[in-house]
Length: 225
Length: 412
Picture: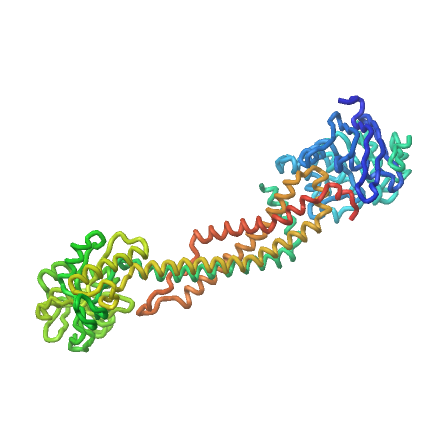
């Protein structure tokens, strides 16, 4: 087991995509993020930032190195194990919200618990609790198409939090929002961080990066500072 | 389970039109399958119903013309069966003969009342002939053992003939008819699909024929027949036994005319099961086009929902959960619309039964009977629906497994 100080602990991660000319996307990336940090990962497009996010979120494999998430080695996992770890340890917030269009806000928030096999009654109660925390209780029965961008992102954050994950991973969470709503959503992240949540935000927007406690810059597949 | 069902309902509601269009193909396939099965069932019921009121292992043996020279005898000899031949068969071939009874007939005698007359003559029988002929008694009784013993002058008439002689709706049992110059008491009225003979006791007929031992034919009930081969074997043994007595070549098929109901029964059974098989094949092939439609719609659905499936995977759905959902959706579409087809099929079947197959006043042969869909067919069709639904969903579901959770991060 690695250093317990870090909730996210990357050690010499390499990742390349096969092809006629293999593309070496991540080069010996080592990174430690402590519990309770609010971190942003910034980089230009093509810098390897998305690949890093995929690996952090257990959405993709890496070639060499070691990644420990909350003390668990994330390597060569079966599809089922990866799905379970994502369900239990990671809360995702996406740029385009990724709410399911034909489910209302409550059902969307409750969905991760559905895949845990939790009863409908219990998951709806938990989902309602999360919506209340996001100030969205009165929109519980609305479909995503009936919500504004900021409201959708709040629902998405509620969905990410319902499993009480180890980390919150946000991919350009304000990318689809206007500047006013962006600030509101960032305030939500800061409040959650104040409650002790570990949050990693991947962004190319300096204004978002500024509002986090630490900025990790990635360029050409390497961490630059 | 309820949750899974809700998930499925939600996705189906989301794709209403497409679901309905594909569903129609499935409904149509099942509808045809049900109607075809019901009609063939009606046919099967009708035919087996006809067999059920008859002894199946009956052979009727009539003397014919020997065509082959035998032991110095020339060809073209008439073979006439004797009453004693029945006892001979019972004793020599006791292992395969349950009983053998003689029948006599006189085709020229006129049967009359004051109202009308019949020219068909009469047939003299033993009580056993009722089961071998397959007559059903509508009123009164058939010839019984006392009639045989005492040579009573009693007669059993076909319903139509009774109507001719006494008028429709007029009581006939207990009345008298004249058979030639003699007076007979009507003791029963029977129904039969095509046989119209007027039936009297064998012993009475024999006395009327001057006590001759010659008989028209005999009804032999065999036992222990289970295959067509058994039946043919029994026929050969009868030919051999009777050939010995009447001096004809046992291989001379024309010497005896043997009508073998068991062979008919077995052949008909084979034909009916072939019919049922053919109906299933036709129905299933029709259903196939519906199934391909469902498979197609599921493929489209999986492709359209690539992003959604990616999101589900990203938030922790195991691959098998996605697989199960796709397959169950497919089963849901198939069974839902399948049942629409079943209901329509049953309605149409009932209409067919009601309008075209209602029995006529003097019933035709009930070749169609109860053309209905019984519970076992409903169950079989349900099994078919679930299996085909699974098959239709299988390939789209396998395709959905290839969707990686990374899809969730791709922008639409």
